[in-house]
Image (cartoon, rainbow, N blue to C red; front, side, top):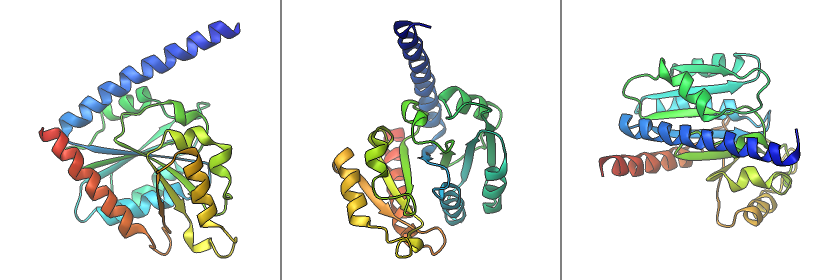
Amino acid sequence: MSEPRLVEVRKNVLKQNDLCARDLRRRFRDAGITVVSLVSSPGSGKTAFLEQTLTMLQPRHRVAALVGDLATENDAARLARSQAPVKQIVTGTVCHLDAAMVRAAIDFWLPDRLDFLFIENVGNLVCPSAFDLGEHLRLVLLSVTEGEDKPLKYPTIFNTADVAILTKLDLARAVEFDAPLCERNIHIVLPGMRVLKVSAKSGEGMDAWLEMLSSLRAECRATYSG
């Protein structure tokens, strides 16, 4: 396939995805659901962070999660421990979720009267950046074990996210993680990007994260009612 033809195919794929994402966003608005997606490299602590989030939200909110993975349903089994409804999307050889996969997953599954739907993408810092999933907030997670220069190596994923979450904060001292340097690198890529530091294990920073979700929910409800 020639380069011009390849570029045209990519444009068409992304255009179709954007149209599907627009439809998803309308459906979420009509259902009154606030949607948050999570992207990161493998091993960033994304699933542990989401499990803790679902567990902490459960007493006050109706929550559910979609989980993308290449081959297994391991993450869905872990998230089910939160007692929230969870559905796995097995992508096979595809290294990201797209809007059509999300739409197909929710067509016959979406629980009634949800407040929050979380979408955990396949572990990858490249491909997911190009695909809108109809979410209201996109998180990019970076663990303290990955190194402070990760935002500079993968700028596109940070440019397309709304909030950066530094995870596994309980290990920061052990791995001599330089949080101020990492934040500076994030802001080189996207000036002003909000950064939260959390540990799903110790609970540090999780209250601030839940406060952000509460504010997002209020904003979405105001938009929906308007």
